[in-house]
Image (cartoon, rainbow, N blue to C red):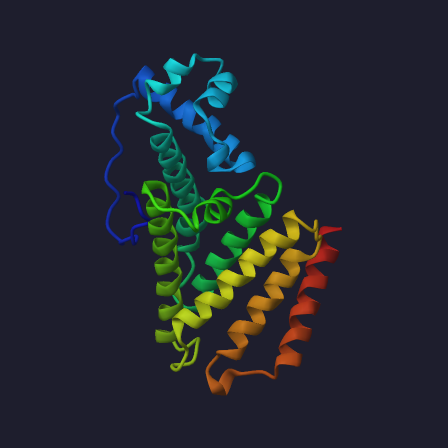
Length: 240
C-alpha cells in the first residue's frame, strides 16, 4: 500500500540508469490511459474492455499487465497520488516553514483542484464511489487521504511552532476548514462553473488563518477581508 511519506532533508539517491523494459513502458501507458478514463468515468467506470479499446489492445493483452480490475484501479490510485505529491507537496516544501509553507501547500492544492475542474478529480470521485464499500480499493484510498491529511497537519503544526498561528489552535479544526474550502472549489468550479471560486477560496483561507493568528497579530475580520478583496482585484487587473 502506497502512502505519502514525509519528505526528509537527506541527499537524494541517484536515479537508476536502467531503461524501463517494453513491458514496463506498456504498463505505464495503460495506467496513463486508465487514469484519464477514471478522471471522467470514475474508478467504477474503469473496465478492461473500455481500456483495451482505448489502447487498441486485446483484453487479454491489457489483462496480462494486471491480475484483476481491482489491481488496475489501485495502480491508477497510486499513480494519481504520486503525481499529486509531485505537483502539490514537493514544490510547496521549498517555502519557509510556518504559515508561508502552509499557504504554499494551499495555493498548489488550489491550483491543482481548479485545473481538475475540467477533467475531474480521481480522489474526490472515488470518495463518493467507495465511501460505503469495503475492500482493497477503499483501503488504499483511505490510506492515501489520511497520509495527505497528515502532511497538511504537519504544516499547520509547524506554523503554530513558528508563532504564525495561536498556540491554542486545534490543527484538526484548521485542517477541516482548509479541506472544506478545497472541496467547495471543486464543487463550484466543476458543477456550477463558478468563475470566482478560486478567488473566494483564497479569501476564505485568509479569513480562517487570520481568525487563528496569535492574538497580538489579529486584524478585525472585515479589515482582513477588505485587504484580501483588494489583493484579488489587483491581481485580476494585472492579468487583463
